[in-house]
Length: 457
Ligand code: UDX
Image (cartoon, rainbow, N blue to C red; front, side, top):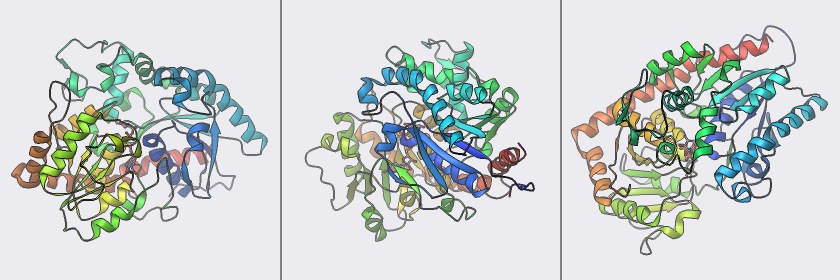
């Protein structure tokens, strides 16, 4: 527990999330850890995002909003993701100032802003107010290191080399780098935002990453030399899936989509380790051809499968594919952690969003990787070659995963000696992840160090 020796008002952190599911999930879990240690937390994100959330926050965490300049319709209002970023960067800083002033007037002054590292301008605001500024990286450190090297000018875009060599990391081919290295022409502002995470980072009082020391020792050690206040504090997933340390607030979450939790009942009568769980996160759209190949790959495997196809994607499914068949169930959203924790689950076909990767590692579920966008290819590289907890499905010249290849990977994972080894590795990682987050573990110690620093302000 943190040393709260001095009787005083609890320190107040404003946790500012980027307005997407894959970002608010870990920041909410981190908030819950802070609350458990006696810190007062206000969670904030954008108005449009909040409007569309199914919001079940614990009473101890209040929710506030800032404007991204697109309060009515989000990205659609801006016209494109690039235009959205530009508008958010113009409007966000002043809106954050307004929120800090409002909270101070209400008698709730903020002592520290913990901001999603994408929103680097929030650190400048924290400094203006003379309060603690802590950057929170939702991507894995290996991915962050890649963008840092772009910012340093050590990786030039476009990448023309066959391989990129970075300190403390395996050699990376173009296909292992974040997708924006392939789409840099249309995604210029996104790349700028990602390299901009480091533009003022030397002024940050703390730099957190939703990562685990044991998982990435070399990169973490290397990173800590650059930012001495860099700390791993992951995996930020609900603690009941790791240990019983935080007992309150377990069921609380915020989601963009309603879970179809009858899938948990559907799993109940399936044999142990028999069901393939398939989900591609909250954002990435697939084209019809890709969905068709995955659909038939799953059907041809002749195994049970539970597949999350978001409502916006459902019309792209092949016409002869029904939501419930003898072997398969399709839902629009589920409680992913409950599913991954279910003993019927054999493996996870995933897009390798960082939260999904951490969740699979934390629950010892082996993975089949189909990365599509953003950081996912780098995560897939680590899954296959560094942590050895999964198999990456090959893509063809159209960058599509074909049904036979998916089927072969499923067979390999479920039936081969290599698959057995992968399953053993997944179980070993699970133990390390749990230990890191438990009392006295590497991440837990870092959280306590931070909380103690807040109490001694
Ligand atoms: C995005 C990016 O795509 C990802 O690469 C980046 O690392 C974070 O931001 P997203 O695509 O949504 O995130 O993937 P992911 O990081 O895996 O986050 C999805 C979250 O939604 C996970 O926490 C997962 O448990 C949850 N989820 C997903 C559900 O609760 N139910 C579902 O049915 C599917």
